[in-house]
Length: 94
Image (cartoon, rainbow, N blue to C red; front, side, top):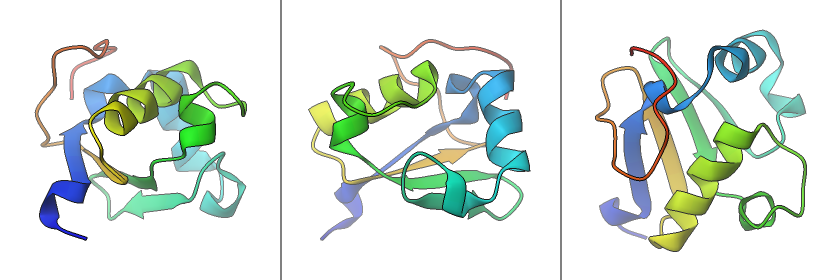
């Protein structure tokens, strides 16, 4: 595994509803393996079943997983200081 296996992007790609869900739900109950990343964001293993629409997850998270999987990433860090990327919807300010 290498540094390139981690995609770092902005939390702006998450809707307010998804952020609220992630902040208020135990990470053991999240739709994919992951957890809070301190108080600046969230980190996930990219679940290809979710990325392919085979499991239920918020649509914005599904799109992020698809984006990451298509580019060969295994993990994604959604960081308040991360940069937005082209190809994913921006839901809010960071």
